[in-house]
Length: 429
RNA sequence: GGAGACGUGGCCGAGCCCGGUUGAAGGCGCUUCCCUGCUAAGGAAGUAACGUCGUAAGGCGUUCGUGGGUUCAAAUCCCACCGUCUCCGCCA
Image (cartoon, rainbow, N blue to C red):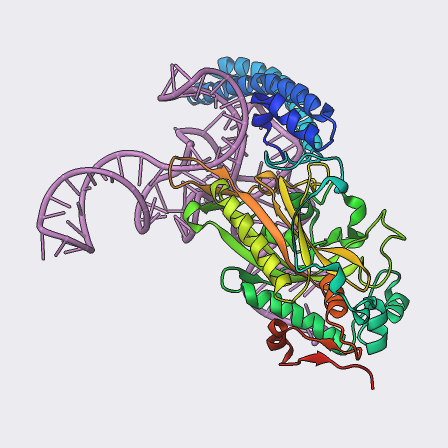
């Protein structure tokens, strides 16, 4: 959520920033209009309340002194003021509810350094590592869904039978590889990030905090009977750890990581990327998340990116880093770097991590603040997060990249300790 | 799921029966100062958040789990909901 005071004092700056996303600025104008009216009426309401309070005090004094007639006269006046106050209050509440409703759907202001652009085609590829299109052998040009069937490690058909399209099931060594990747991701970040195992089903309010609601309702699974939502990412519960809390600046930055299942309806992408693990409704992911001061944010952002990047690099996978343009930036984000890993069998770049700085956008929604060491009062803090490792696409890229001429899969050295020393997934005999 | 008890400021805890002078006693913690060879102990003052107006000092408003009601006036009375604890039931 944008800062209403910023909108008030620098409307043109805010509007220019929103326009860079390609979003309309009408909501901002509307907010300004409603907010102005709200403050006018709010002031009048407060004055009325002040008078009622003063009268009540007088009444108390008069009654104590036995001046009943005088007291009753004041009471009558106060009753009249009360009516007025009630009407004003209702209107003020209505206005502020409207302002909030609009503000909840307006995206974050992109960072200054964000490249301009309309859509994903305008993203800037900042770096490509380990990719040489001519280096891939014939045996690596097999798609993971075929490998999965050959080795009996991926069973899509039966998963679809029990849960429907775009659900998958890993089996045997395939399931073990999932578990290995999760442990690999958690263990390598243990030095700085606290491991958390949060709920995967959360309240509406929790989904609003990160910006997944109300705008993106159709992307989330909803448990209607209990009005709970299946999380699309651990970002959702991790962000809400500090909801309505005030931290001390000396505690920051706080760093959390969590492995959870993630649930996505993928509405609007039906029929796209349906094969294998490219796009699934339920998947495992290790997420890294931090609470930081605005001053710490740049360093934390770099830290998360470096950790996400090195996790891919150490698995021996080719990857590239994209600086998302203003038109492709997530709604809540001010700056995002995507990491895409290359899958030689499918011959595609797969997004495996999105490392974002949300400035104070999410923290304002979640009301997470900190007390600065210098100065007084509280400030809204900044949140940042990135996938430490998203399992399915890494799994896909890994089995394709490390497929041997005999059809076995070589387990990269860095991963072996997390898979009981296993060096390969053997070819079928 | 059933029964009972409870939900007050950073924390502990009074107030609620008998509504007003209670933004809320007292204590702890924290900050600054004084005292002191150092530390401890002791003394003095200060110490909520949010909204709004104001250059500021400060004014006004809101907040005693949440929402609603009664009243001139609610931490205090009434209703609903949420949460915590204890006992019972069920259970991985």
